[in-house]
Image (cartoon, rainbow, N blue to C red):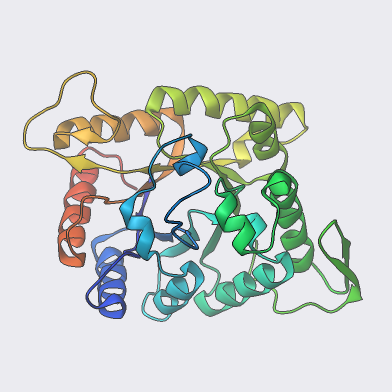
Length: 308
């Protein structure tokens, strides 16, 4: 199982230094991927609760999220091996033609190390700021996947959907190879069917191993129903480990507890079929603290035979 690490994107004293240091140290100690997330604004009176849950306050860290593709471009120049992924971009906030070209450029700059993680989104404030309608978010996600694959494909390109028209045109650059397209979230019937039909894999977060295993089986079954090979899909699980000195009780949240309990959860995700664990250290007090915590998690995973 591979291990990825979310890069620091919050309120940092030295954002450039901390991003570069984290990226280089993560690659040096053995992480396989570096990931970024997206939040485009922080409404003081949000129309929607976080994750679309009514009344749920937004995380304070969302106030300071740096632009994800800019961060990955910086990291592309200071790393050599790790894959660079988005976990996630909200598809409906981006013109698909521009997104496809940006990602193909990044793929060229990295020698073919990119992974595009997309989601439908949940904040109507973000959609309004982008001049988009959240009511069409599912269609926008599917069309973005289709458009990227068409624009990354052979020239000349002809493609049409509800948001764009490309008619017999040369579109460049092209990716080095095939960019995997993952879809995050997705717990409704329609969302799971979309992953099964369109995505190269699933990028869940906030679920325990049992829930992930059950949903992943359903996605693979749906993929088979659509004539796809389920073995070609990959599961990348985003985990927020918070390590405590003492073990926590049975009602603990997944990924939280003693290091032994955290490793137990990681092993359960591996058993569920995860090809990668993407670590997000929400309790890191600084870049250096994050690097130390990231090293401890990876060392424990190595000792348990989970990494590799």
